Each structure stands twice: as C-alpha cells, then as structure tokens.
Length: 427
Ligand code: MN
Image (cartoon, rainbow, N blue to C red; front, side, top):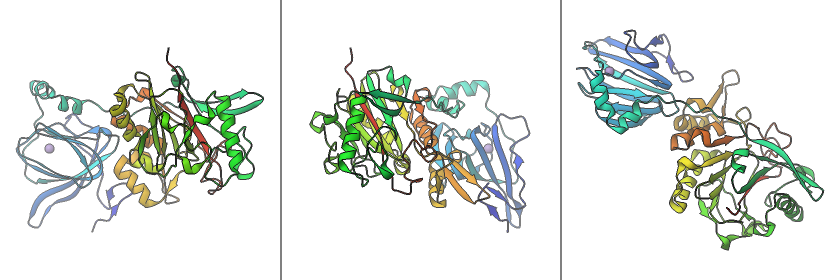
C-alpha cells in the first residue's frame, strides 16, 4: 500500500525524480515510479507531471506506451495528430509514433504511463523531420512554447461630478479612447440609506424603489446617458446572451419586473442605448469591438465564468456583428478577489479540473481553498483567442474595499454596483 497525497500528487515512499537525465529536450517535468515490475507483471508504471508551460521530450521508439491523464489538462501529439487531453483520457502510443505531451493550456498536466521493463532507447527527431512536421500548422502551433498570460491591472477609480453631485466609477483609459462611455459605479454619491448607503443600483435587493431610481438618474446624469433608455437585466447566473435593440430601451430601468428576463449578458451595436449589469462580488465584464463598434456587458459570477458566459457572448458578437475576437477589448471590473473567495472543496475540484492548478489557492493549515476568479476568466479568455494585451483587469477586491458593495462581506444585505456602458456616435 502506497498512500496517495491528493494535495500534491505524490505517493508515500515514492520519490519525485527528474524526468530524464540524458540531455534530451524537455521542460518542467517530474517522474515518479509507482511500480517497477514484480511477480508476473514485467512493466514499469510511472506518473509524470508536466508543469504549466512545460513539455515532455518529443521522441519515438520501438516500444509502446499506455497513458492515462491523471491531473489537469493540456495537449498530446501522437504521430501526426494533436489531441486535447484531460483527466481520464487514455492514449495509446504505438511503436515508432512520434509523441509528446505539453501543458500548454494553462494547467499542470499529469499522466500515468505504462511501459515494458525491457525497452529500446528513445530516438529524437532529426531537424529535417522536425521541419517536415512543422509544415502541419496544427503541429507547428502545438510545438510553440506557451507563455502563461501576464495580467496587467490597469484600470482606475475616478471621481466624476456634475450639478453638485459626485460619484466614483472604475473605468479604463485604453477603452475610453474610443467612442464609448462606460464605468462601474461604487458606493459613493447616492441617496439610499442603511445597508444600501448610498449609490445602490439594484431594484431587487429590498431598497426603497424611489431611492434606486434616483441613484440611477444621478449616474445617468453624471455620465451623460439618457436615463429613460437604460436597459437592466434580470440576472440569474445562467448563460443566456441577448441582443439589445431600440425596442428594448428602458426595460428594467424603473421596474425590475420589466428587466430583460433570465439574462446575464447583453450586446448591441446601436448607438445611444445604455446597458447596465448589477454586481456585488460577481465580475462585471465589458466587451468592446473598436472595429465593428459593438459592445456587450456581462455578469460573470463563478457560475458564469465556469460555464463560459463571456466566451459565449464573444461568439454571439462574432455571429451578429462579424466581430473578430482578436480585436476585442475586454474590461474585467472589480469583483471578489482571490484572497476573499474561499470556496468548498467540491467547487475547488470543479475549477481545478476545468481550469487547472494555478487558479486555485490551497491553504494547507486551514485546509481551505480559494479561487482566483478574474485570473480564471483571463486565462480562459486567452485560451479562447482573446489577446492578453487587450484585457484590462481590476485589482480591487469588493470584500476588502469599503467603497464597494459586497454580498459576501455584508452577508447578503447590501446594495449593487452597476457596470453601465453606451456606444457613442462615431465620426
Ligand atoms: Mn516515450
């Protein structure tokens, strides 16, 4: 019996070894020998783990491998085919097939590998062979080193004033260069009282309706948006994406019952329609296409991030406005931060399997787990084809930020901030 430690994928009395020491090219791989042939089983059973961004040796040999993915996900090359692989997948590597595993999808990749105890030496590809292989564009892309995205936290909070009133908004200069007005409201500058003090933008949280309407009027006035045209959604943590047109103007603005039903993402290419998404810990996301002059506002809590609501909205914009994801600018506003977002072991496991090790933080002393929700979203957007340089992320944490509403900090009795955005006329 060798007890498995699921926190670090090691086994009792099994050493973590260097992958190879024959100078063959590989990056960030460890090896553990789980079984080394005894009784009538003449095989070696190993566990290899490829760190994020690493890869095993690109090689071939006469002997065969039987591989099962045991942790995370990535890609595998077998012969002239590249496969996306994740936990549970079985890959048979036949004799003489060129093969390699890469943790090139933002996750660690661990796999069990069975080989005969007696086996021939590994062959590396010649440079001619490599050039020939790279003529296949899929293989060429696979062989490129994957760099995990460097997030730049380059949004800021500013005070805006008009007619003797001031509010704070979080916004981003790189997007404000374009004919679009947008901002994430904070707590300051409204008329609500008590738990909702003061700029509560949510009609559905038990605040005085007239106070919320007044708050929305204040925001619209200061941001130069037509209050009566603001569109709000009945957000339900699902992944429905709706196109908004002039016919929808004003829905949900003064009555929650009239908000766009069961909707967590709205997009439009019509000028002059303010779209609003309410948040208190969930991530507010703005997508802007500066080429097609179209935009979307998205409510992305953990369910939305897990189910890919932002990617789904991008697909809708590509279908509707012929947007190209390589052009899209994305703002991910203030939400719950990694330090504050403690989750259950079950939820941690779900995120670990879908998004990989680096979005999960383990606190071994407390035996607790946290998720970095905005990092999860950034990484999955980059894998989806959004350019890292086009993503703008808030480094504020609603739970620690007294200037923000936080559902978790205020135990559910709190107001909502709103991401409001409107396309302006282009010259
Ligand atoms: Mn091999």
